[in-house]
Length: 441
Ligand code: 5AD
Ligand code: SF4
Image: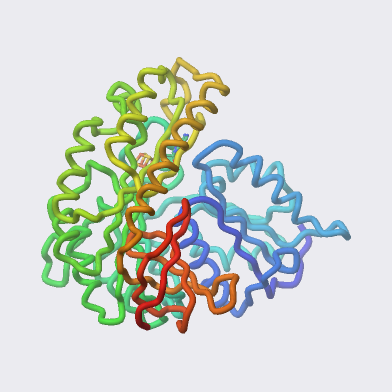
C-alpha cells in the first residue's frame, strides 16, 4: 500500500446505540488531541470513521454500501476506518472485501485509533479487535467541552447472553469502570458545560464498584455521589436489566431528586415460554411486580421498553401476551423490532421461523398499541408544571426545544439559552412532543 500524507481532517459517523454515540465522541476527542480537526461533510474529510452497529439485520451490508458511497468523483476515497461492533464481528472479512478500508478497530481498542491511522497513512493496514478490559479508558484524553446533556459510559459488555443478542460477543464480558474514574469524568463533563449526565452501559444497573472508603457500591450510590456536583441538575441511566434492579436503585428514585423519573426497562416479550427461550431471567409477572415497586416509590415515573416480535416459535397467542403486558404497563416510550437472527447466537439455530408477513403484521399491531400509550402518557402530562433542559433552538422564531424530566421533547417560545433549566407549563400534547409556556427562566 502506498503512503499518503497524514490526514488533517476527520469525520466520525456513529450508528446504533447511545454507547456508540459516546464512543464516537471519544474517538473525535482522541483525534482532536492529535491536532486533527473535525470536518462537517464527510465527503471532505481526509479520514472517515464508520462507527458501526451489529445488533440487527443488514448491518454489514450497510457498512459496505457506506464504504462505496465514500468514493469521490475522481475515484479516490478518504482514509476509511471501520470501528464499532461490525468491526469486532466481521473485521477480517471487511479487510479482505473492502480494500479502501485501512483500519479496523473494535469497541474495546479504539484508543489505538491515532496510531493505526498514522500507520495506514504510512502504508500499513491494520486490524485490532482484542478485548483488553479497561485499557481503553485510561488511554483517552480528559473530557473538555460538553453540550448540556452528556453521556458517560460506566459499564460495558454483557454476561446475560439473551439467546437472540450479539452484544456479549461483540462487546465482551461485563466490566465496570472504577468509581473514582467516573466521578472524575463526570466532573470534567460538568466543568465543560453538562447539566445532565446519562450513565450508559449495556447492563448499566449491573455496575458495581468501590467508593473512596472502600465500600462496595452500586449505581444508586454512584448517582448519589454525582448529585453532589451543584451544577449537575439531572442524572439518567440506560439500559437496565430487570434482574439487576436492586432495592437501593429503586429507593434512589424516591430519595435522589436529581435522578430523573424515567426508567428504560426492556421486557422483550410478555410470554413466559418465549422469555425462557430468550434466556431472560424474568417472567411477565415478576416484571410487573418490579414495576409496581418502582411506582410505589416514584408514582410519576415514565416507563420505557424494548420489544421483539417474531422470536423463533412465537405463536399468535404468545404474541397476544405481549400486547397484554403493554396494556398493563402503559409505556411512555418504547422501541420495537422484528426478530433478526444474529450469526453465532443460540436463537439463530432455533426452529420455528416466523414468516416475514406475520412479523410485519405483529409489529404493526404492537406499534399501534405503543403509539396509543405514548400519546396517552403525553396527554396525561398536560397541566403539569415541570423543568425543561434547553437543548437547541426550534424552527420558529423565538422557539426552543428541550426535554422534560420524563424525557419528552418540549417546545416553547420565550427568552432562553441552550443549557438553561427553565420552568414550563405543559399545555398541549402530540405523539412525539409537547408544547409548553415559559414560567420563569
Ligand atoms: N433481533 C431483534 N431485536 C434485537 N434486539 C437485540 N437483538 C435483537 C435481534 N437479534 C433488540 C432488543 C434489545 C434492543 C437493543 O435491540 O429489544 O433490547
Ligand atoms: Fe443483549 Fe440481553 Fe445483554 Fe441486553 S441483556 S445486551 S439484550 S444479551
